Image 1: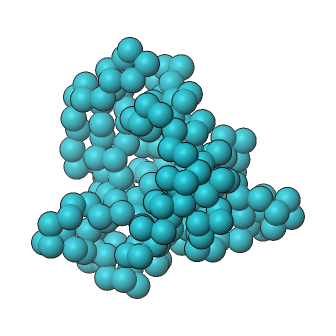
Image 2: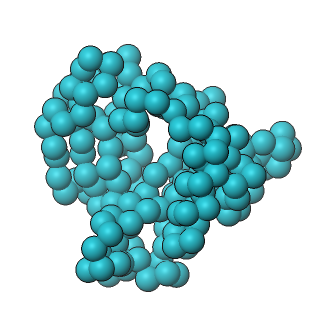
Length: 176
């Protein structure tokens, strides 16, 4: 499956495809703590703003000619001392999960971040004591396989679909 994938920088023209992928996670899962899916216009703004300082990548199926996933980095904090730390986010078309696409995106994102001198990469992951109809352990398991380690656990800090969810913070050293 990964042979036909092109990883390239996102542009505002990709906003409709990105919004379609992300809307599923907002509307049907606890993966995102947003309650309302951002509009296409909001996605255009996000791509433009994030791309000024951090990589924002899309995975495009070159055969089908469509975007099937995306990844981007964002600041850990706006404070200057955090300049060389970033957070990563990856979202895949729900039909493309467990096919190696997340690994391709993560590896491409990490390489671009290393070139920019980012030392520490973080992932903020929704979790719970047990998986349920809105949340699996796929994200935390994926990040562990990619070399992230748990550095923090916030308990019952996110309320979605009438249920409380935890947040797991994971870290990966990109430059040692």
